[in-house]
Image (tube, rainbow, N blue to C red; front, side):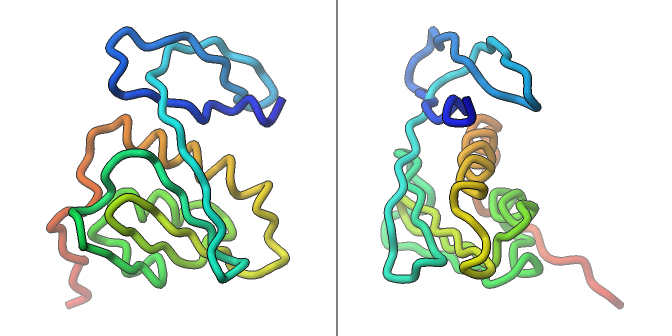
Length: 138
């Protein structure tokens, strides 16, 4: 049933449909809007491109987050870095590339958490990048 994790969110459907979601060994019937997130391999086997089907950044823009410290300006990047095994994140106009720490981390374990995090984030309506500055140490 782990493949039943909700991967289809359709933000354009105002009626939303009932979906099954697996959460902590219990099957819940929840009302959700659907979003279909595709994945695409990259030349780096430790990186995977996630295509949420919605705009991530403005056309032609990219943003690299080589570590969690650099994610201060992105609520989405901060959420993704909370997933154990995530090394770095890269945003493009229509994609999110996640790099795992090494080949010992299994994509089959990471992908469901990444899918859920992306879906949860886009349902909040928060900006992907904000103007927040890191806290000063002085």
